[in-house]
Length: 529
Image (cartoon, rainbow, N blue to C red; front, side, top):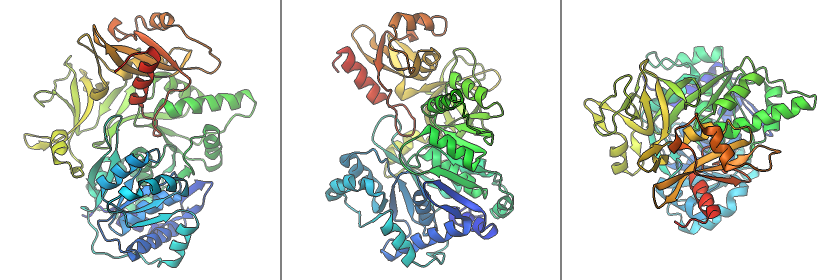
């Protein structure tokens, strides 16, 4: 059985050609036949420019139909789409393009200035196509016949570049069968033990109308999109780089998605505020079509989970644990008191002792590292050493070590503590920022928070909170915050310093920008590195 994304999508298009496939707010409304034709035209155009199967094509675009069309076109022509962070500076962009061996780039005009500044340093880039008129002209002049460049297979590649919260971006190389098995089958409803042509039956009765809210330049949004596509569903997105909660809610009213994706509190907070603001003005949003809200990539605090459920009573909120290197690992079950998220792992996810790489027993009080087996990527692009460290073989099983630390409970659920690389060591005690942030954001005066360690002569690092205040709140006192946290956190976890920012900066995906938070805190506190 060959699990190839292009083959599956073409089977869906043949089954339901007139069904809606992609709707862009501020862009086109495409049927499956139209999406398939446009992607085939783009694939043929790229082949006409001298690109070949295996060529890497940079997707340097904001959300829009062109982004997903480019990915599909690459899969059709057996090329490899490369996601690009549109916040990169010219030097960062040059690093990514050279590391990824990018041959061609499709970009929005607003990013052309940065690309041109980086252009003298790009080693392999041979073709550039801007969206808008040049893109449409290219499609118009190309054949709409489906390209044939040799038999497609499960081994055709998908690469996702991830920067995480630290370090240079790195490419995670997946076989297409493995990325489908690790992530996309969940939204699609695929049974990997059955033949791939099951997509035809699924497409005949599509169940998903999926709204992608985060940017496609990060895996979370397009993972959900391709899961919906493979199930014959429709994908909805808003054009552009900015997240406008009111425009998003109006789009929900108009298009009635039944599933949406956010990335933690960075998206939940403005959505809740927009819902409340509209209700107070006597024009509440009708978002009752939403049945499932998935949060992935960053913590969704208990406070905002509660607020969302209060405002949309029939909404099922699914908090997921996963990464670019692992796919889906676990889903949340509950939040209680001051605990961080409790997850039920899937059948291939366990917690290993970080030293011995042996499974921790249920009820163990020793933290371990979350690991996953089963459908896994091949490793990091051009980095065999990091691949060997992150994807060790233990006995007869190959694992990915995710970097997440957790405890294993008696019932087999895992209590997520946080990312090891963000852990703060203060006086020999380990403090995971996510736990402290979750507690801080329950304070009524705090809208958002990031927690970092700043240098301290006595303890090595001092726990420091960088907070954004709730609208209308002018100030907040450190002692008030410390008092609020008493009983919720152990004493050594309570921040010693509090720094107020006009806005807590996060990455476009909604993930925490700990580097910014640490630099901002040290500058405000007058601490030198």
